[in-house]
Amino acid sequence: MSQPPLIVLAGGSGFVGRHLAPALVNAGYRVRILTRDASRLRDLRVLPTLETAAHPGIYEPGTLGAAIRGASVVVNLVGILHQGFRQESRFSWVHGLLTDRLLEAARAEAVPRFLHVSALRAELPHPPSAYLRSKAEAEERIRRSGLDWYIVRPSVIYGPDDDFLKRFARLLQWSPGILPLACPKTPLAPVDIADVVRVLRMLIDGATVPAQAMNLEGYETLTLKAVVEAIAETLHLRRLIVGLPDGASWLMGALLQWMPHPPFTLDNYRSLRALSCASAGSVADGFSMLGITPKPFRNRIPAYLESRGA
Ligand SMILES: NC(=O)c1ccc[n+]([C@@H]2O[C@H](COP(=O)([O-])OP(=O)(O)OC[C@H]3O[C@@H](n4cnc5c(N)ncnc54)[C@H](OP(=O)(O)O)[C@@H]3O)[C@@H](O)[C@H]2O)c1
Image (cartoon, rainbow, N blue to C red; front, top):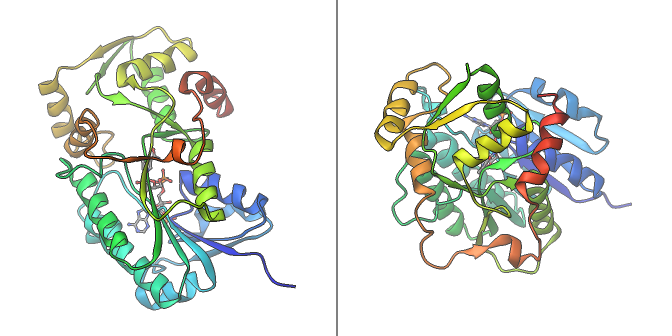
């Protein structure tokens, strides 16, 4: 009997991978997660057709070929929001070099399809932040790869155990009545993890749309301040959320970026600013192209915040 197709998730130990892997297993696929640290996958091991390729040097060229061998699709979920000082924690390494290595291995192993998760506004002609520039450069590498590819560019993703709702819920709980908020007017169209998983599954299943990059924006666009207010309301927290003017937002990023695990950096500030720019040229809307109506943000946050007992 032939085995079910194998889907390899590079960086699949993270938020998106933890939701995508069970969905793929339930759909009958074999799933192999690549991670540098096996302990990150302990709880996922119960999934019947999940394999792991765990090794600190998993993305070394000598190791990567065997790790993706036999895959029908490689999904690249490797990403960081803040870069560190070590070479292996720079955007150029994580988004650039590792994408190159995955593409090279996929070509050598004749993997039929490559899916890549990028970020909204990486499509701008001159992305203003180092994060977005590195995402844009990775996209360019994929376009030139000669593989059958798709790129999805989600807006900020929310869902159970995300970093987005959780972070603001924590900030609100800790704040002493007033929460100063950088970049309050940033327009956000938060996208539900269930919708992102649905899109990735359709592209893995073999959607009949041509290879292309597509943006994934949620059902409604709210300012960052309105998003934080909605979270406070859900948690029944009476907080005064004070939007900082632009100069103070810049200063907050400039100061906080020197913390060991910075909650906000100057580069984050620049990425948020980019969300106020209209996207350049004609950009494919992934949800409408694939016939999906994204879920409304406000209706879903109570369930997601409660699911983790925030
Ligand atoms: N979450 C969002 O709101 C959002 C929005 C837009 C775009 N995206 C993009 O979507 C992708 C998945 O996001 P996510 O939220 O699932 O991210 P995540 O939870 O941070 O997980 C990313 C994974 O990348 C791997 N990784 C990080 N640094 C690495 C390094 N130096 N070398 C090798 N691997 C490294 C980690 O795997 P190991 O430590 O196990 O090796 C980690 O599990 C990312 O590319 C992200 O930029 C996310």
